[in-house]
Image (cartoon, helix red, strand yellow):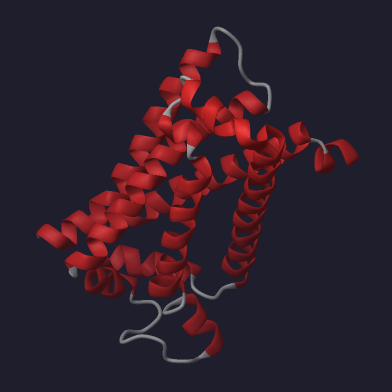
Length: 220
């Protein structure tokens, strides 16, 4: 346990495992969102099913913990790397052949975190929080998720911000997916190129799935 919490490798493992957990959540959330392309009633039914039920609250707390752990360990590792490299980090960065996303994972993570806060304000605060507290935080009932989504993404300003956020998420995931599996040891000469391809497929599916919703309400 000491090794896991205090060594650099252990911290990378924790960040990788929390990242894989968040990827699985993104796939679930994306699947839920896609129902909105076919039926507003089905989407509202899912919102009502989740809502402020005990299992949804427990799930929310676990998700918050996963995001906090991932961002905390990313911050710690970034600061450790900068301290270890010192003034030579700029020279090292200019010579490396690593992808741009690999060099800027923390910056991309910060953009994603900002987008997440905006997402929570526009949806969680007006839906689950409103149902939990009984406080009217939006124009619609907490279970009327389709109305909130339609209202938000009919505004071009929010749609563009959301799509920009998804672009940052795509760049973050294309590196993060294969890197996570490499860190936990599920990698070798055979699987390295496979994980790279899987990373691009998973990242693209997630981002296109999420992007379909704002595009629908913005254009149609």
